[in-house]
Image 1 (cartoon, rainbow, N blue to C red):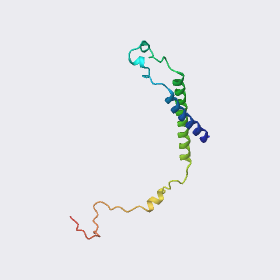
Image 2: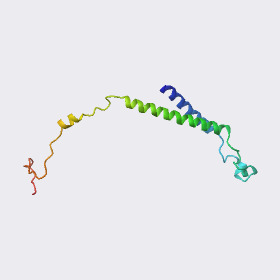
Image 3: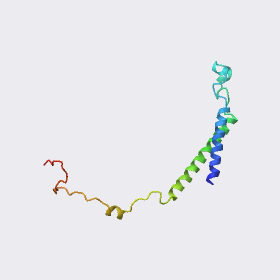
Image 4: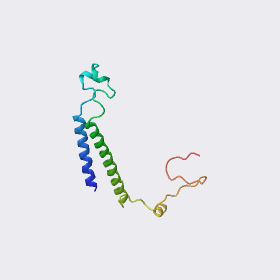
Length: 117
């Protein structure tokens, strides 16, 4: 199932790139840049939205849905991995614990450095 989603994801990405490169830019019409009559319409010189624009939006939706699907599968696999990180249990931590000095208790220094009092 994950491989199928990955295939759709890659195909959607390639299709989005191709459609964006095929589309004509909003300022590509030379008449619109010099104040032609078509530039005074409500939606600009290209009209509402083209077929390529709608298809790009649909493919972007497919891309986002497949991204969420792949993220879901990755999180499920991360939860099911056992033994990846071996953390010590609480009993092991207590056995290996280092004894901390008690405040106010004086202890002889076991080093060559002078002790200031």
